[in-house]
Every structure is written in C-alpha cells, then in structure tokens.
Length: 410
Length: 226
Ligand SMILES: Nc1ncnc2c1ncn2[C@@H]1O[C@H](COP(=O)(O)OP(=O)(O)O)[C@@H](O)[C@H]1O
Ligand SMILES: [Mg+2]
Image 1 (cartoon, chains in turn orange, purple):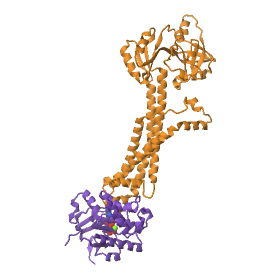
Image 2 (cartoon, chains in turn purple, brown):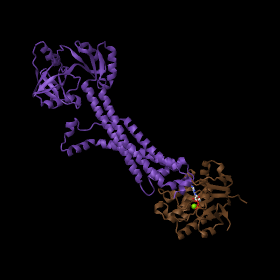
Image 3 (cartoon, protein in one colour):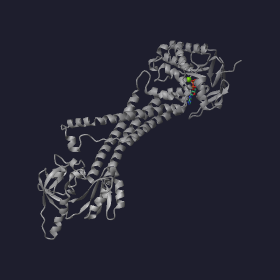
Image 4 (cartoon, chains in turn red, cyan):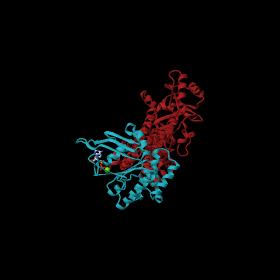
C-alpha cells in the first residue's frame, strides 16, 4: 500500500483505538444526508407511481375522440380491438351535471360507462367500497365518489335527483322535463383526489338519454395489456384514423399534473441535497483543523521525503473514503428504515390513537415505495464527490505547506 | 583520503522582511567527513537552524553551494532532493514530530515507507533499532502514551532506519530534563558511532559539544574560532 493511503487509513483508524471519532461523526453526517435523500426520493417515486397508475386506470390508457358526439362508433371500436396491445374497448360519455341530495346541490363530473361489457375498461370494481359490485349499476342507479357522497350525506340506498343540460334545452321550448330520481348503488374511492372529490358514474345509456346523445358517445376508451404501450398505440391509431378522429394517451391528457409530480420530486431532492452539502462542509472543517493541528508532523513527513501530491493524497483519500462508507451506511439505513415503514406507520397511528387513520386519510396502510437505480447512482455519486472535494480543500492547504515553514511553526 | 559527506561553500542566506532583508548566514564554508561528529553552538537567532535547513535542502540559499557526497544538490530537481534526502540523512528535531495515530514501531517504519517499498528487512531493522534505544517493550504504544525521552528515542530510531550516512539533529535534548537529555544524547552519539554515520549536532549544551569530534561556533553569520 502506498504510504499516504496507509497514513490516511491510520488517521481514521488510529493504532490502539478502534476508530477515530472524526470518522464516526463524518460518516453519520454523510449517512444521514444520503438516507434522507434516498428515502424522500423513493417515497416520492412510490406515491408518484400510485398516482400515475390511478390516473391511467381511471382515465383510460388511450382514448379515441372525434369532434363532438360520435354517433357511429362501432367501426372505431373494431379498429381498436384489432390491435394486439389492446385488452378492452368501450364507449364513454362525460360531462358536468347538477344534482341534489338531501336538498344540497352539487355539480359533479359525470361519466357514463358501458357496464354491459363484461370486462369494464375502467377498473371500477376495485375502487368500490363495502360490498357494492359493478353489476349493481343500471339505468336507475348511480355510483358516487366518496367526497361527493360525504358532501351530500348520501349512503348506498339514498336517493338523489339528477338535472341534465337537456332540461334547459327543453325549457327554452316551453317543455318540462323532471329531474331524474336515482338510487345510490355504491360509493367509490380511487385514492386520486381529483376524482374522489366530486364525480359520479352512471350507465352510458342513461347518460345518452340525459344528454340527448341518442346512440352516440363522446369517445372510446381503450385499456391496454401494458400501459407503457400507450404512446405507441396512439401513434399507430393516429396513422389509421381519418379526421376528425384522433387518439390521445393518458399521458397527453395529464401532462400538467405529471409535470408537477416530477417537479415536486426535483424540488424535494434539491432541498435535501443541502444535507449532503452540510455534511461535506463539516468534513472539510474537521480535516482543515486536523491539517492545522498537524502542521509540524506534515512538515516532518515533507522533510523526510514526501511530495506535496502525496501529502495532499492523505486528506483527499480520507474524504473519498468517508464518501464511500457514508454512502453505504446511508443506503443500508434507507433500505432498513423503509423495510419497517409499516411498523413505523402503525406506531404513529397508535400514537394518534387510531389504527385505521392511514387507510382513511391516505387510502393506503403501507406507504408505497419505489427504488430507482438512477436515484441511488446520483445520490451516492454526489455524496462521494462532495466528501472528496471536502477533503481536497484541506489537502491543498497541507500540500502548500513548506516543510521548513511547517517545522518552524511553533 | 575520503571525500566529505557534506560540504558547503560560501553559503549565504538572508530572510526577507518588511523592514528589508535580515542577513543570517554570510559565506559559510564547512565540511563533514564520513563518521565525523560536529557540534554547532551559537546564541539563539544566530542561524543554527537556518544552516541545518540549508544543508538538508528544506530551504534554498541565496548564494553558495551544498554538496552531498560531492553532488551539488541545488543543481538537481527538488524531486531528486526529496527522494535523496530520504536515504541520505536522518533528521531529529527538538520537538520529536511523531505521528500521533501511529504506534512507535509504525512511526519508525514511516521512514522506510516514504523511501518506497517496505521490505521484511526494514521491519527487522525497525525492531532492532527500537531494541537498541530500549523501547522493545513499548513498540505498540502511540506517542501519547510515551514520555518525552521515549518519544525522542523513537525519533532517533526513525532517523537511522534507512542507514543514512548523515544525521542532522537540531537541539534534540531541548525539550528534555537534564537527566533524560543526557541519556538521549548518549544514545545519539553511540548510535551514530556504531552505524558509522556522520553527525551534525546543534546544541546549547557545552558538555554535549565536547563529546563531538569537532566544535563550531556560529556568530555574526559565520563560524568563529574559540
Ligand atoms: N522564515 C523566516 N523569515 C524571517 N526570518 C526568519 C525566518 N526563519 C528564521 N528567521 C530569522 O533568522 C534568524 C536565525 O534563525 P534560526 O536559524 O532559527 O536561529 P537559531 O536556530 O540559531 O536560534 C533569526 O533572527 C530568525 O528570526
Ligand atoms: Mg534553532
């Protein structure tokens, strides 16, 4: 081993002592910085994936639109079904409506789905609460989102009144159309706020009736076997479809929200990066004071034959080593900490006096986590670069010492 | 007749200061023969340490030459000097300068590590030297656990590890009490004699000086006869 590596290791692990206090403290700093960054990023990834999945599920992977109402959608359905990536296809209609429940007016987003399809394109069943099933939906019944149900105090079995835009049309012609009385068949919660807040699901046939669509729909929803194929499928569809028909993906339709999701992760990572920066500073300060304290020993090593580069190597190597060991500890802390996140959250819930609190507020009991190799590579890279630079500054100072001056330094 | 281990000709050095240059040495000529011990005395500030730094090439002179076994060192690269110094001379200072994280044995071995590869012979010699200075039982002790006298003995062993033909010592007993200083000085003179190394000894103590082959007095920038 080169003597300067040897001396660097000896300063971190001195003879007669197991480990130097500096090495322990510096490692804790880097470890915490790396762990906090990785934990935050992994949780953001997990939550992001969850939101993406719900977005894609509830929105439909690919949709075919026209200009306004599509009256003859059967050919479009056939085109879509002919594609190997497509798992299920169904027409839909959507829009806003006014409703009353318990004399409280609401203006929910309303979606008409084709429930007669055996395999619904939107996986509604998994979001239904209690023992409601998708089959319960018919032209007299409705599913409400959890937020909407709460706002009007509705439960399965309650009745609501639905007012459609068609009523206004009729009014203009001095005709009267009474609001439609519907029974709540079930309540759904997707965990995706946008939808859970204020929406309802009815049958496509009822929607057609209320909106005067006759046999038409607003578009076709496609569910793919793999949602990652969405862009490729949309691209091919757009080559096949004639104007005015066109296909969009869930990514196109949620661009703004996806952008914010990514931005959130970037901002959180950036803020947490400062922990690594602070850890690096503390390494730099400690090594700097070590250089000042050891001025004469450094002078002697120089006097008996060490070059400036070798002396610089002693301190640079220490920073580098702390970067590596601190990163390893940080990764272990991340994996260890997140592997018992269920227990930790349960502990918090128990402290709050309510074991179901997580499920009720966040829609999950265990925090979703997703590890991305790139996050690990960048974080570890930054930690190692940060601590090596932290070693470099004192190293330069040590290298600039002239042995004679250092030895005269009494 | 053999040639000198160390020779200086017309060695001149002044330090720059805001009030103008401070002349320290003006035209020092001296030679140390193989195996010879030379003591330098002089008042504080007379330039003894400066002379030692010049002949060990830790500083460079304004004029004049330093020759190590006939080679004019300031005509060579600083890299050459650093590498040559490692095996050509052993250095002992008033304040030991041991590395606190290394134990006594490892401190002695540092001299061999700096030279290049560490061999089994180096390890053997380090143990022998520590035995010679009476510290074979304290090999695994770090400097913090050693007394001043013991530390200086470790420094002596380190200075001699690479079998240098020349040992430079700058007031090696300056930090020690009278009795301990006596022991350390005895050891230094004895080791140099046994190893056949020349000794360049800076000291204040006239007793120690009389035990060297030749006594020099530095005054007013040059040697004076007494
Ligand atoms: N780096 C320096 N800069 C300026 N003056 C110095 C420096 N080093 C030594 N001197 C001066 O040079 C003179 C000789 O110093 P030194 O060789 O240390 O004396 P000694 O070792 O004989 O006591 C002193 O006056 C000291 O103040
Ligand atoms: Mg001096």
